[in-house]
Image (cartoon, rainbow, N blue to C red):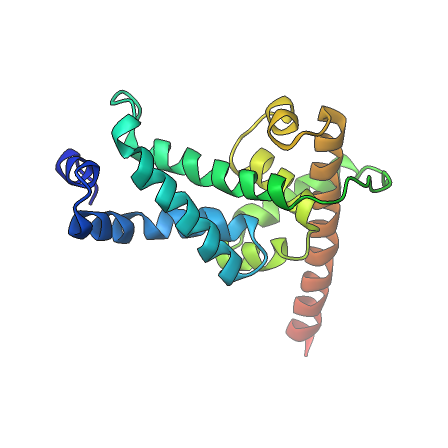
Length: 186
């Protein structure tokens, strides 16, 4: 458990305290990084980068900001920063037709009922940029303008990526439910 004593020990750069903090934050940090990265190796690399930033800046944290929220923000920013440095292309994907409202409602209802691992597997089918924008919008609660500022895209592009991610997820769900329905009818 993370408490003020552990945080103070980490600020004094005590290796045992840093290891204890790493173990305490690992599930939360890995969950965030896994949502944004396609493979576990990249997620672990991002997590370790973020944890290093946490340790490096732990003495600069404002005490009025809850520690878990502060670490979460650092992890999300680490993933976004890495994306910015890796982004070598600036091509726009063509705009697809928007989904019908009722279909989106069905998809969103089904997604809420899925287990996190199953959703993470489905999310891997979404193209990288759309997955990042979808994560920021639908999971982490960022507004389109905030996403646009973070990723250096327009708000319209941010909205398109969310729509595109939903379309990919809808198609993946339709395939999965089709397979499930066929399996159940046997």
